[in-house]
Length: 93
Image 1 (spheres, rainbow, N blue to C red):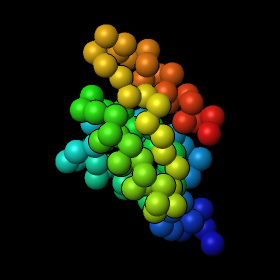
Image 2 (image 1 turned 90 degrees about the vertical axis):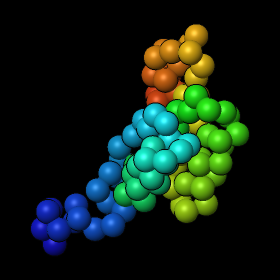
Image 3 (image 1 turned 90 degrees about the horizontal axis):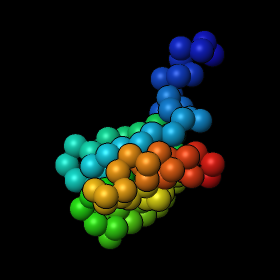
């Protein structure tokens, strides 16, 4: 199988990658998080809405066999530092 063909197989295109999805609990962000997880990415969920909403999408990804965590939930006062730390934790597994 050619490298190009392998890359197009479902579940392979993002294997070994970590995707930080902001706004992952609703609308387009939710769809993107689910699509990246289906493609093999470990998804770092970021939500300003609520921890519960973030937990819900993380559980949905995990139930589908994907890897995700919401460690990078942040409030406005913690900003980008919290997001960066959370993405690193997801990458570490």
